[in-house]
Length: 222
Image 1 (tube, one colour):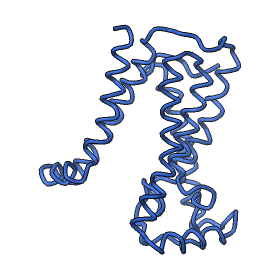
Image 2 (tube, rainbow, N blue to C red):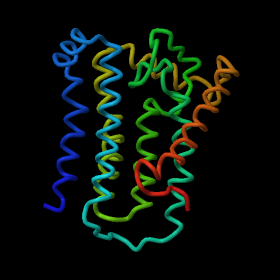
Image 3 (cartoon, rainbow, N blue to C red):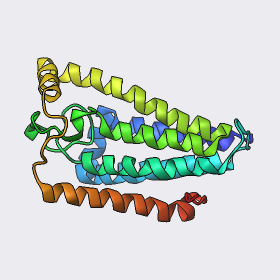
């Protein structure tokens, strides 16, 4: 029973992330409480399930996979900064290739933003977060936890690609070709908007550093 909480937390996490998003379930919930309330409730549920899952991994029996060394703490401290910047630069921007976008009908393949390097920047940020935390911990429970997230993020890129190609048809390939032909370092549509997003990413990084100890129970600082 020592691993029971982690198993249950895993089950609740994946059920809470999959069941509410089923078209029939989501449409029914949105009819009852509205789309905005659904998104707020779903986000809160997702965060709560994630915090519980991480806490359950910390309470699971410690089984070392490799000797822990102090340098390992520097890995997430360094990797999480670009991950946070990726989130800030990608979220709520037009991106018809992936999720997390907004106003996708306004997407300009000549100015694709991070989609020029990666069609799924939010999944890439998740993979960075997870892989860095596998290295920082080095025990079985956390390897299972963060390794699962890393694998989910990488596999999710192919899954979303297949879904979007099916939904968009020939438009997917034409947009993909146009993005590939755009400059590697495109001029931003708004320099002010870019600066605000970079500041937001830095604030997110600092916020995670400050909240990590009181919320997760472990200091992220080397």
